[in-house]
Length: 327
Image (tube, rainbow, N blue to C red; front, side, top):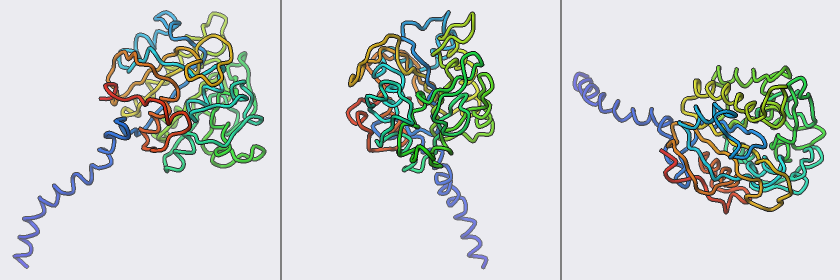
């Protein structure tokens, strides 16, 4: 018994050293993922509206230019895929879009069965949420609210609702939709309390697609002295610090659906105009990046970061964001 005790004491320190790497393994999982993209733990993708890159300035977008930019991988040659809104939301989540989506038709009358990031994450067992500001109830498929009351919700900005693999029966939406395509708060003015509570309680999902209402996304001018660009900038200035305070390892991405200007560009990979893409987090190397990128490449990068080895539609031939941008 004495000899056995001495052996246990002798090997206990060695056993402890062997166990340490195993105990640390989950924390070390955020290494290099597919195609050199780091493995993502939490991503917050925030979408603004209808802003050409050249319109951003310190006067109109002080948070983006003075606070976000110094810490961001800041892409100056990033392009939306089309006009109008819905085609871009669908492009960045499924790598393609249809004619009715290009025409901003509501999902209840325009939907398709195609590969998309939401179903890919579900199949991989990775949690996700699409947070919609001013949405009246989960998976709500109709217009609601108004600019006057600062709570205009439009399903044309809710890409998950365009996929039958998420919604299922449009007369009786699936639990996948009602559990994950949800209000970011109440229908009160510019309310994000549910999202902010999830941040505070550390219950946000791995992938969070954040859709402000029609005032806060910069689509409409909702105050007499307001500016649509500044409205989205104010949204970022309020929400991004909250994300970073509770999810310091998260990748926060801010971009816009499309640039200013009309015209149908169905089928173009860059026809939606030049918009900002900014990525902030410990994974990125801050700086200005000028290589040509678009929504399809962003989707491929998300798929890589979440370990999804099969790419949706045009993401399969797009260039992922790789190289010096990642630390």
